[in-house]
Image 1: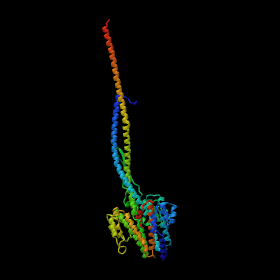
Image 2: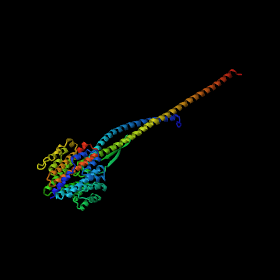
Image 3: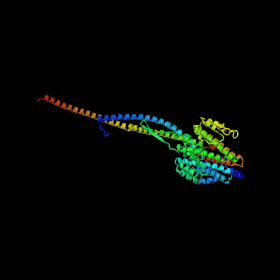
Image 4: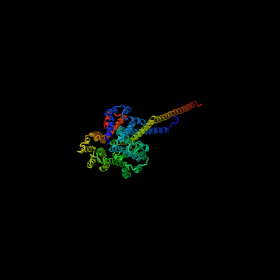
Length: 357
Length: 224
């Protein structure tokens, strides 16, 4: 077992995450140039120097953040020899594979130029740059799926199954939905074996499934989508919502009622008051049907739960999970700060927009 | 004035022309008043729509900025690929006081979440709200394009009418009046000359008659 070594490295990396004072300092910078100058004093220096060679301003910062995130993942993957650690990292990296395939399919569906599609790809998952480039070269959606199937890439399975429905309706959302459902099912399947580490990863994934489902339910209720249609877009594998509860929420007429009902979800053995915060959403937000505000609360909850994994057994995958969420949180915050700086957003409003500080 | 024939016929023609020009001017004035009324009606709706557009545009930009900040801009661009569609609008026309203005018939640009094309599971409500705001902005822009074009055309017509009224009022009618006056003066002058001439002839004839009468009287007084 290698957990002691992994834990020590992860804790060392965690100590280099930006603290509240540094983030506050970034918020108070008057403009983009001084923000970049401040960021260059942190662990992002190397990525920023590289990014500044290609881009300027906020684009350079975003490029650097993306690179840094990828580099961090690769670094952790390099020193993690534990099966569970590698498994969790690969589950996390698969998100980019799914995102890249979706981007290619979307681009091919409306015949965007290959250059435009390539600009939106982040080759950090299992699908490397050469594979993605070849996929981009395909003439249409069907050819992309066929090529994935020829190469026996796992993502071809859900796409091949959902393709007839797409061919009939022309609705790309069907393919995307199948891909997303497959991602979560596949990830949960990969950690279905017994063991504390697998259980921890399952717990984090289930929490994510719950949060995604709650967001989807609220969006469905707002757009008054028929419950039988809405069911197609919900993920399996969550813990907080059972089928009965989902069916009851989907028929509610307003998101205020839906949020109220979802806030009463409780599982005595797990988290008795997990979504109680949904009942405290201000009335004007519910009346204006601003799901983004509720979404922010849900994401904050998800990140907090993820980061709290640090408090778990240090000789397990828990610290790795905690670190990834903390890093994700940091990168999102820096991105929000830099975007808000570009738009001359007042500091007070910027603090409100920061999702996870 | 030299081309004008100072005849009664010409005077009558000029008077008829003046009357016609005055009638035309009055009609154009009435049309202009009606156009101005229509113009102000549209203007108030355009200025309301412009204010609304400003607000919506600001809200849309803010939503976009927040979505780009929180979700990765790459994710946002990718989602935009799924929603990129062309908008079909049909353009017909209607008449406002003889001014052809366009009527844009379009389907509502605003869509439901499922109609936008991107998958729901991995996208956020922030992206929905950004798309929603831009769709509202697009709806308003198309509406504004219709009313602003109508307003611009009405404005151009009002300006053209004003120029016509001014031309009638400042140039044509005064010129016709001065021509009529010239003809009238010329005719009066001629009448006076004729009268004078007649009087002169009459006095010459009378003098002649008087001479003949005096000669006859002298012959009668001294027959030898």
